[in-house]
Image (cartoon, one colour):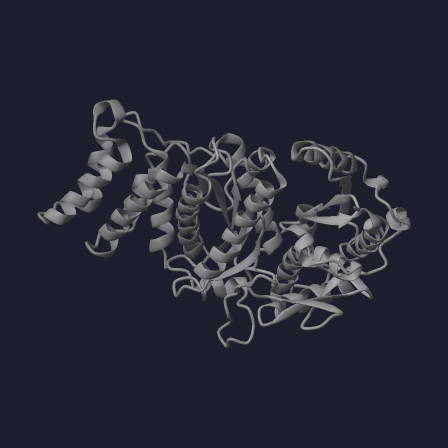
Length: 488
């Protein structure tokens, strides 16, 4: 009986590739389409390449272990080791050319001998060696310049972005091993959620004429309040630790697949809802992360809903696994400074903020310059609703938000403000002035509902007892949230 081998492959340099600026001459909606196409290309590579490898070798699809999120795992007979290596060398050279050398495909092989923990250790050590030795990658093209120009590759990415939303299948051909083909190719697979297809989250908000994807300025104009757009990125906390604790290959595959199906399925369903479908565009969903861009208020609502659903998912599917690893999700929202800000810069900023969240704490959401635990985000939403009601229903002047902001030691939040910037006269050493200034802005009133809202706002912002006289971070987030919501 033939010995089986595990082949694990991974794309390195994804963040650098996506953050690269558009080539000269590609601007506006074309630059957005280029970025979307790049992110979808990376997603498709991890899905198409392992399936194409098995198809070229004449092997059954059941040998596909996991795919997506920039990596894949397959099982091969030992006799296919050489042909599999040749396939990946050719695909890796094509990936390098299409990405101008920014992306690199690396892979490791090991025999299916010993416990799964031993197999995983051997694969991990080999992948770590390849990460630290870029020139060790096989293939004669390592030191050669990329043959495909960025403009030529850009045309491919833009065409991919504009055609993927309506495509029924995606295929692969040996003539272009790094270029997935929509509705064609030697081997092709359905872009549906059934067992033989590729489950892919590909929702894109339509333009006003429904003929293309809405660009960022259009999405900003569909926001409630200030016309602004942003990028929301999310990532499962300590996912790697959870995967490394699996005791068998079956458990490893089960966990990997359910995480991937959760993000791909829930994102696609949520973005098709009436409150989201015209305001959001999915950039990608991976094995443990995702990225979406669109109207700023829709992104906040989407993030809260994804977190709620993920908590239920963890309670149902991970209840038998000890420890908190892999059971919470953190997110970060970055807003564009201007409607025409390059999307790659906003995407990179969201990634930087997400790394900041995950290094300082888990199970949190970063927005408006603050990192909040999810339970405190609900408090911020309630305070925001109180502020907007006071302005919208009871006629309080919008300047009340500026008055409230004056009690914080930091200057009002803005997308282009340096973190931690402080105002000159922002102090909160006399709490009674807080009540006095709110009363002065609201004015004398006998409306009991307004009086209740005013009292509730004060207690939510500074606490209910003398021992709690400090402004809360959730109040700061609520303040900026209300300011964004009430601005026309």
